Image 1 (tube, rainbow, N blue to C red):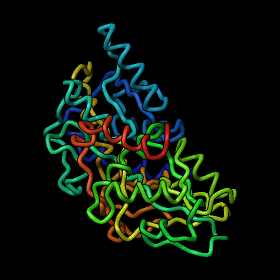
Image 2: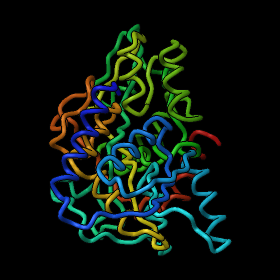
Image 3: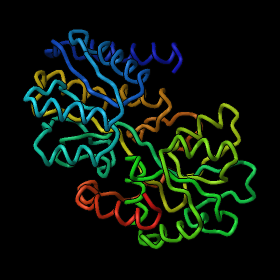
Length: 329
């Protein structure tokens, strides 16, 4: 994000704060645990504190698995630290909700959002859409337009995909595709027959396709879109059947020491200013009226596959076992 763009967003946040100055503004310390990249986390905190200067934010950043491990240790010790979580996926949030770890925010305004991207009981809220589509090497003879195209003879032994045993996004992708009436588990069986290599995370898939080791891959959108803009020999396709998505949801812990500041943080992330910040960072905003970053089609042209996080949580082990039987561990 450029300094000019960041300044514009922070300036908008200040104007919003001034417009609501008659209301009591939250204060005190807010503790945030997040899996955002460091630069994104710092920009998010800076924009929020510009809108709410009475709040001091302390934040811890790591991968979602490590964030949760740290938090579980704190729960076990009876001393959870964060007020707010901003982490990778809704399945994780659904699990925490079922354990009574989250606090609802019934006043959060989600009227502009796709209902399928939000918890209807308002315990967690999607902040962006990180979709999984098809990356291809520009040397490939076939440019796919659908998931079915990966079953063509041209793609045999030329497919890389992240493993749901490693990647949360890959887990959600697996559940979304296998739940599609025209794809199902038969599609994954066909991918295994195609010799698809399923291992590691999204970064490895991107490297394999950009380097020509494989011609096609399943990968999160921003990696190939940014790489193509930087000159890498890759293209990215939003398949016609639709794309799966993770949403980097935000939620307030039921043990939050500063719930008012936590609610203000959620409200900021869901506001137009917060969603413009996500777009400026290079992500597809969850708010349908905020313009996507360069390289993305209009939000109206991106079809989202159905996904039920509660069902995915309940069937997680069975789904991963079935995947392992097809592709190995």
